[in-house]
View (spheres, rainbow, N blue to C red):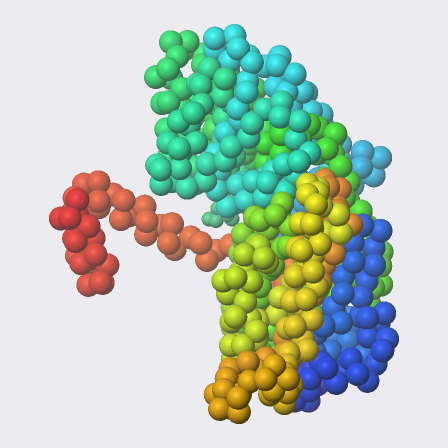
Length: 546
Ligand SMILES: O=P(O)(O)OC[C@H]1O[C@](O)(CO)[C@@H](O)[C@@H]1O
């Protein structure tokens, strides 16, 4: 038995889960009119209602005891202090240092990390202002109008998600584009309308070895140099963000155009670093700093609020409850604000690359469910696509509903329509409608008995489907920063409770290695006999059908 299963709180939660599976949230609400007050957290800029989960005070006490027994607070202190909690890579985990104000020193290994971060922020600000104010000129002396960020995974999803979310805050000084896919269709489409003399590329790659990014960057260099006769055009049109300066330089990017990344920033937590340059170029540096401040606000809340009132910790505990103890295998992220249309994709990487693992810190197999698979879509679009499944399938999918009180693009009648759906869906998922009610409704509508007998079972919604509601006061840089940081800390707490190494990603390596070998085989038309017969036949079919 793994050590987690031996904990008193774990055993208690297993027992409670057995009891809870036979209960309905409707009963819990009927028994306790204080449920919302007990199971919600209000912060200055957002609200979390987690009352629509299959919990009661006893469950929450046991979950909080689990957080105590697994020493979440001690690990939190270690992370913020820069201890090497990324055990398999022997690194600190300090994305929180990236949003620390200048007057809050953080000494790690004798160095003031805050000073290093502030120095880089200063360099970023100079660069951003130069580009936005038209003082960074392309090879023909023209100002830069378009930025193309080339990167994938954490070097793409965070910046692109934030750029999309805060579009309304951009003053249009530059247009920002993203290329992540190595499918040439994307880069060709992005570059087609652009003029090489006015484009600045940011090659974002922590390792500067990612094949997809290198291939796209090479294509971008060729596109630029075939348009320009200036041998210095790469220096005027390419910057890089990386922890691997040597590779960036041997790729042809000038040292002065390289922004550093520290090894203590994980790719999926890196939008606060120079990886966020495209955000800052789009919004201006003041708004980028507001994003950082919002994340810092959430860091402070996470550090200081008791766990029972702690937004990220509660999100994590509810997820552990629903997955590990109640057995849900997936979780939906359902933003109801168009601006957040990339949030689900972003959180897929953040949570699944962090905690989608099956051995503990000690390398033992975990014998409990860890994190769910994350999926979803803008809520309104989902309603007309997959909500049928959420309401009536046999699989219970807990969901986070994320909305905003104010619209950044108010259009008469739209926001109330949107938000009435937002509120109605969590209510419907919880309350459901039983067969008796269905039959009574059909009867009241004058339906025949035959029709009622035929249709009634299909109209039953069992309800009892868990949801969290996160309601921001509005989507702005500060609030978005807080929201993202809340999920980062949720993921951290989940990892601690489940004994997962949240900050490595060994599971992506095998496929990368095989892809490199297969690419060689395809390029030399020499398919190895060592493949299994499925892969070998697919490769041969591909080669012969070309
Ligand atoms: O920034 P890099 O080094 O190009 O990596 C991009 C992404 O690839 C991954 O390593 C996964 O392959 C992610 O963890 C990372 O965010």
